[in-house]
Image 1 (cartoon, rainbow, N blue to C red):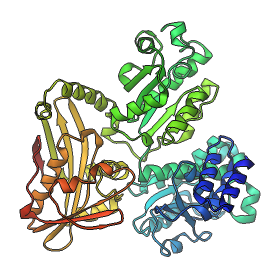
Image 2 (image 1 turned 90 degrees about the vertical axis):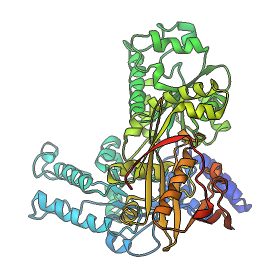
Image 3 (image 1 turned 90 degrees about the horizontal axis):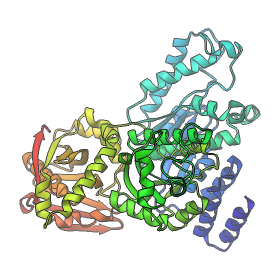
Image 4 (image 1 turned 45 degrees about the horizontal axis):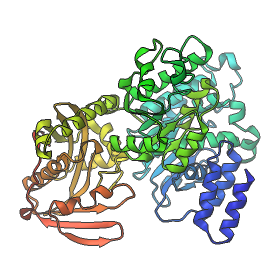
Length: 602
């Protein structure tokens, strides 16, 4: 593990700062990179990572010392290609630190048990209410930052012993009730990290370091610190860009034991043996991911017929062909398969996770498609579920109806593509879809999905502003603001809530479009034309005379770079990544679209 530090030091000395950071990233991605390695690399990265592009700002505030988490979280983020600007506050100074310094994008609040478990005469309810009052005050003063709330844990069973720790008056029972109360009271849109769960899974003897706490008030061991940092990064990703969207699976020795081309569809190992049960358990886990919205796909080096037969014929098969949104089985490189799947699903490869038992195939994908996350698959099939779960790629803060129906949406999309190929012209195809728009004012019922779209929509997003629920609610209370959500259905199915527009008054005569975004599933079907036309209509109804908008370029939203030009808005300013537009409403026609509409309020 020391070689990559030496490489980074040599590159840094030569003035090759970017290359030095990449050398550290390569080392951090190795499976053997432990807590001490992350801490050392993180301290170097804090000095080397550039200020531009602007990194995500995370502030960690706790009732214990949090200084060791700062470099480790920096390293964890960089290992995944995400530069982070992580800072912390003074020991047990949460409420005071929240009101000082630059606002953060994400604030992490880390409790400790010195007050909750203090040896005094308070009953359980009083202890819980005291802590809740403290954290409610902190939540109210986070200045618009996204919130990650870490739960409580008791490192030891306490004086009552293990048998009574979970009984009334025991430390473990109090901690769990405290965590339940925190979850119930937590502001909507916040992430909760269950420290009790993490410590239990890791083993408290390894997770905590009592000597370290006595010296520095830092409770976690090096391995415990790394575990917490990884979960903090997963929660940060869930809050800001959303989880990974696609899991691409190999078949032979991944979803079943053996090679189907040699053993036949009924000869592969699945159920009724130790390895067979392990493969079946892994399939069941993947099925569960699909049911909560993760898109499954196959990339296999096999003949197509051989690859598909077990899903039809094997009696112990959990997954079915209908569970996969794409199925690539041939003898071409798997990187090519993943690229085709991404094109078919209209998703970026940076939303993909690849799971393959063959290390050579994994390395080929890593080299060819560095934006794809590749799971380090263990040799033991019984560990497949643990390996995928520990990756934390699919962590999310909530599930919506659209998530649960995602598999059906992609199956319907395949039918739409077949229909498109059957029509002579695009207009004929769009007319045949019989699209219907359900447009309504943003309301509380849809808030979870609204915030989810704000957090994860990257491609068709004019400004990529990641507003939280507090800002959305503030605009909902403005009578002259236009906050619209759009659902679309067609003859093949329901796309769900796939579009948002937020337009707010700049002054009495000018309406400014702050946010216009749309799911990539409906791109190219004039849905964006309909949405823009509704902005113009509402602006006129509210008495505005002019409309302003802007495009803010990111690494992922190039496809909307000229959207506003196409709508006829003149450019008024081009500065850095931002292009500003403004026009008189009388000069802007509503663009043609193929949607019938039902307008519901707003």
